[in-house]
Image 1 (cartoon, helix red, strand yellow):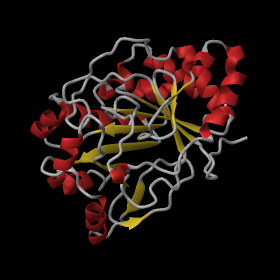
Image 2 (tube, rainbow, N blue to C red):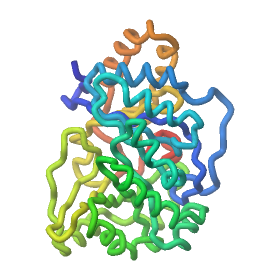
Image 3 (cartoon, helix red, strand yellow):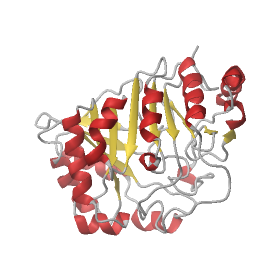
Image 4 (tube, one colour):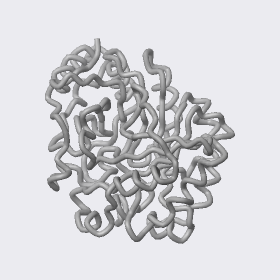
Length: 325
């Protein structure tokens, strides 16, 4: 059986958040740093295992560990090993800011992580520091080198493009894909509840990037069934590829194949939805997993056709760290 919504979309991809916390202070997400709120802690290892097991039983084959910054959890290695071993999970992926990658790449690959997305919004140390609040640009770049040495199946670089901040670096990012199979992904800046003014000042329409890629000889590539939201492009002179995540584009939501489960045990049917569905109470013991499964099937039927970002409606998303981006 596969999870299916009311529009006939089936789901094979889960973004599983391990924490809302992040140690970076990115200008488009947490410019003032993470501030912990009173309340329960993140899902435990056993709760995460139960959730992943039920999602996999319903046809989801790919899980991405995300945050916040998931690798700040002291039990991260154990979580990765546990989720990788869940029957039915064919690919375990990780999105990270890369601050531990240089030293931990081989450990994570051994734990069962197959695909890696590294956030790197500038190749210039000064600009990187201005965006993230950290002087770690070269460290993260060395981490990407370490990821290739560790033998991950895919390594992707995520860059949120911002007008007047890093949009002059597009050619530099593309150059990184010239001689190795790195997937460079440009992400269109998205408006969130906390950062409407920042969005207005720095948003770049994805069509600008698409035009630049087309002019440079990049052509569209077919998307895999369990792929994320990026539209991919290839070039005969490049070993790597380019992905473009354009949430404001027409029909962006039509092929949605992913669900989000927050670190507090809420099912989010859309990153920019108006609510999260509390599910944690059915993850307290293994004998509750059938109930969790039934409620999950019913909840996914409530998924709407798409977000309303084009109308300036950002839903409950305060920042991208809160749900896992």
